[in-house]
Image (cartoon, rainbow, N blue to C red; front, side, top):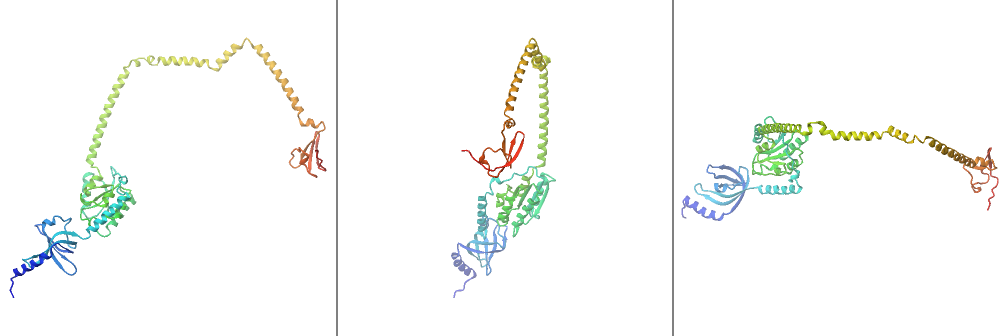
Length: 422
């Protein structure tokens, strides 16, 4: 049997191993992760029963969506390699996929389409931000750099503005529930004019709390305008689309929330100066206009301006004098003075005629009085119950009582017999 050197043995194993394990995909958990100054990444892939070394060279590492860390579940794609100096086989990784990332992206896009269909992203649901908020509510971690960045920006732009922090977890289990609850609490107490909801940048897993429907619902239902400030400028979450305004960073959110005090003071100063200048200019124009009016010929004498109106008033006064009742009576008296005796005679004749006519009417009415007819032997019969006049014998019944009115009295009787005439 031939005795092999270590190099010969390693070369023989390498010749058998590498051609048969090209284009492989291996799933496992990253451990012992190290990043060299050269940019190359070294780590182990392990599962419950074994582990294998792996290397991700700088050129392939440039395509990573984020830097791996211990504990990440990944799928490494590449080929097997035998590292001769150590006699150790390893995987040369060409592509590294984080397990769960594809599923998260799918959930992200599904929820995004659902909320878009509901109209939660529509511009008509966006509330305008207040121009001069008195209180700003912040929903973020109390220990991260986000709250410090926001406070620094607000202090620089508008020192003294009131900030209320509702501290929450921004990633991990229960983070989305805390964020939603904080937004609801701000709305319940109504102490703030605008809300900033956000956190620093990170992977899609780190930002996932802001992709949950519970947070999107709280933002959509908020009566207080919401500025979303999640991650860095290139990071987008569901909260960004639902919010009234999306800021690329938390610092930018603080800049959007308030105007810079120095600029506002300059604006007010310039506006005051402009108003003062325009008022002085207008006063000068009106003074000049008044001077021109004083020099107008019409204002030299009041009679030149009012003479025609004075004459019209005098003419109207004369016409009104003619319409006075005393004046008209006097005119009628003068007109009828020559005829007083004729008027008196005519009036006496008319009066006599009217008296004669009245006497004739009185005599006629007396002749029609029923009581005068009763003196001639007539009588009027009445029903006893309602005293209405009996007009026909058919209206009576045997033994029915009735009353008879005569010219000198009233008789009550009863029907003994009824005979009807044909």
